[in-house]
Length: 271
Image (cartoon, rainbow, N blue to C red; front, side, top):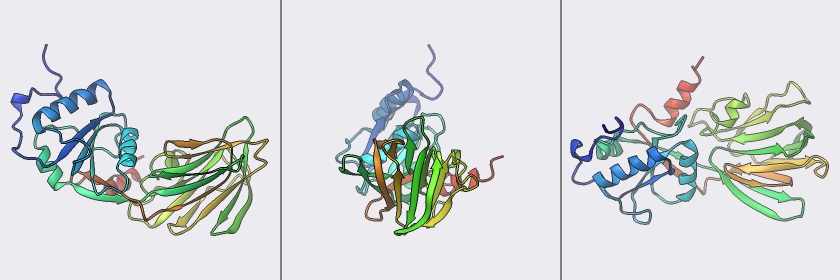
């Protein structure tokens, strides 16, 4: 049987003699695992603990998971797409990986930090590279009060939820909720309602990245709300405070001409 065109036999690829300390991680799908085995055979694998570069094979969800694993470590992550969209990933090409890594453009991302108070009074924290979202968890619409820097900006928002997105996350759930796309270097955050009912014409706000957003859940017993920071979820929250956290960061690598800021710009001209 002929090999899949994406996976050439190792003997057909001229691998460099040195690629530095690199580790390969995969999302576990058949294709991503086959690619990981081929790359390890070509370039070796030093393991996560010693890696100077991490190559993540999977989709955008797996990329987020990998970035959370290496938060605050000065180790850049180069993603290779084996998912559906691959907005944060590069194309798969096993040849010349060392040259691609050496030429890659770096993008630094700072996460949002979420502090959530639950109905039982307990406090929990989470970090989000894309967005923090509040979502109704019953058939009842949520009722929220919005405070920016401790100043009440909206007494009552009736909606399915609301989210605060980073520039990196503005093309994800935020865009699906009709929020604005933010340039990756913009010092802004997007506050976007999800299916707002009252006030009906409110479409959200652009905030400085220094703003602290507090969201209070009104009538939380009757209208329960969950809070989600990327893939970390807390149920039955009564108050959530969100702000950008410059004490944490991650580094992404992209092939020249395909950087994250270029992709965000291009997304604004899709029609």
